[in-house]
Image (cartoon, rainbow, N blue to C red; front, side):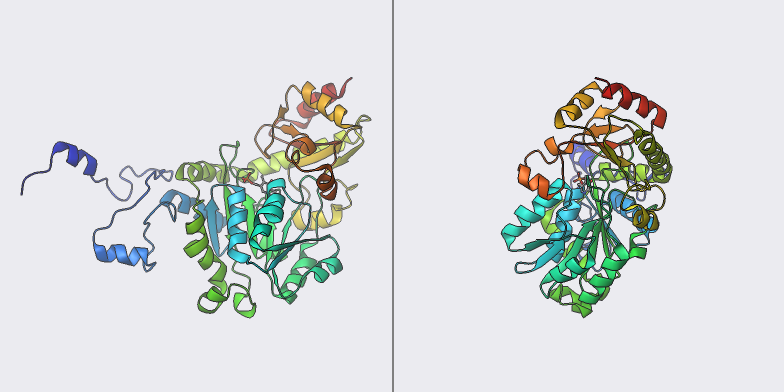
Length: 411
Ligand SMILES: *Cc1c(COP(=O)(O)O)cnc(C)c1O
C-alpha cells in the first residue's frame, strides 16, 4: 500500500495515553470526540456497557474529574456539571416535571429561576404553586398527588429567608416527593444538605466554587436518597433503575438532549476553585458577619439583614442548618431608591456588579437590575424592595469595606 502523505500523517499523529507528561493537574481535554480501536468497543461505549468517553456533550475526562471531586466532597450518589447554575436548574426540572404535574415552591427565588418556573415551564403545562415555606401547614396543603417536587433556596436571595429543612423533608418523605434545594448561598463544605433531608442539590458553581469568578457553571447533585420505586414519579425509570432513576433519566436522556454540559476549560478552573473553597468561605463569611455587626451601628442604614445576626428572625434555624457563618452575602436598606443609587455611585473599593462570592466585594440594587424587568406588583410579590442594597463580601478586610461604605453614605 502507498504511504499516506505528510499532511495526513500530521493530522493523525496519536498522542500517548494516559497523559504523556505525568501532569500533576488534570489536563484540559479539549476534544469533542474520542476514538476507538474497534467497532465492537465503540458499540459497547455508545450503548453504555463500558464507561469510555464518546462525545464531550455527554462526558469529558476533565469535567468528569471535577464531578468526581465534588462527589468526594459531598458523598453524593452522582454529580453532573452543567454550563451554568440555570442549566443545572432547567435540567433538574426537565427531568422531574411533566405536563399536568405541579411544583411546590416559594415566590422567594432567584430571578431567572422564578422566570423559568412561572413562564417557561408553565407553558409546558406544569403548574407552579407558590407558598410560604416557613409555614409547614401551608406547604402540606399545596402538595397533592400531582406534585413532582418541593423546591426551595436554602437562604433566599435577596430576602434571606430560611425554611426549616428537617420539617419540610418530613413532609416530602410522607408525600413521596423529592426535596430539591438550591444551596448556592452556602456551599457544601459547610452545609451538609443530605443530613437535612435534601434529595437533590443544585449549585451555581459560578459563585463560591469557581473561586475568583473565573466563569459560569452549575452542579446537579443527586444523593440517591429518594425512593423513586415507592413514588409515582419517573415511571419509565423507577422500576429498572431504583434509586438511580433520576440520575439515569438525567444522564441518559435530558442532559444529552438539552446539551448544556460544562466545558473542559470551565471544569479545570472550577476544580482549582474547589481547592481553596474552605479557606475562601471561612474568610469571606466571617468578614460578612463582622461587617454586618458594624453596619448595624450606622444611622443612615435603616436595617441590616444577615441570618448570622441574632436580630434576624431566622437566626436560630440558620445556626442549626448552616453554622455561625451563613454565607458571605448581606443586604441593607437605605431610606429610598435614590439613596441606594447615590450610595452605589460613590463606592470606591466595592464594585458595582452582579454575581456572588467573587474574591472582590460586589454591590447591587436588586430591584432595578436582577428584578428590573418584573412589574412593581411582581417585585412586591417576591418581597424585593426599592430600598435594598445587596452586598457580596470578598476577601478584603471588614475595616476596608466599612471605610468604603461609610464614605459612600456621606451626603
Ligand atoms: C446565580 C444563582 C443562580 C443561577 O446561576 P448561574 O450560574 O448564574 O446560571 C441560581 N440560584 C442562585 C441562588 C444564584 O445565586
